[in-house]
Amino acid sequence: MTDKAAFRRRLLGGGLLSLVMAVGLAVALEPTTPTAWLPVAWIGIGGLALLTAAGLERLPLGVVTIGWPRVAAVGLGILALGSSTFGFVQLLTEASSLSLIYAGFALVAALALAIVTLECLLGGVGLDEETFAVE
Image 1 (cartoon, one colour):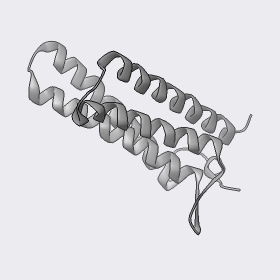
Image 2 (image 1 turned 120 degrees about the vertical axis):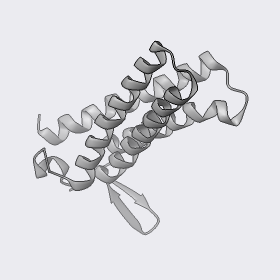
Image 3 (image 1 turned 135 degrees about the vertical axis):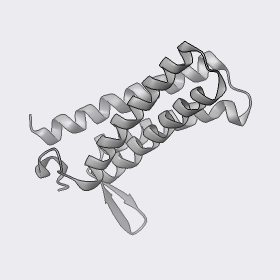
């Protein structure tokens, strides 16, 4: 298996996991207000973008086609932004030791997602350039 196929397979797994988490949050929280739907929406939209990047080589948008690395970067960026927002909200709301741990995990996850997002956007800084080639 090539590096490109392995990377896209991981995008598929991440997208499926994100969608399962979004459905689980929707079932567990039973959101009724728009602000309660916000975490479900950002996880779901990020997961759909990752699934799209894993499944399509090029995404046609009107007269322009976008390669899968850019679509993956958008999905990962959405997840990174949501994770960092969740982390900072945890820091600002309740200052207990458990909320600090949650905030730390969320911010570390946001950093990791942001690094992978930049890798997808720049295409080959830490990984081979062939991994991000669009055919």
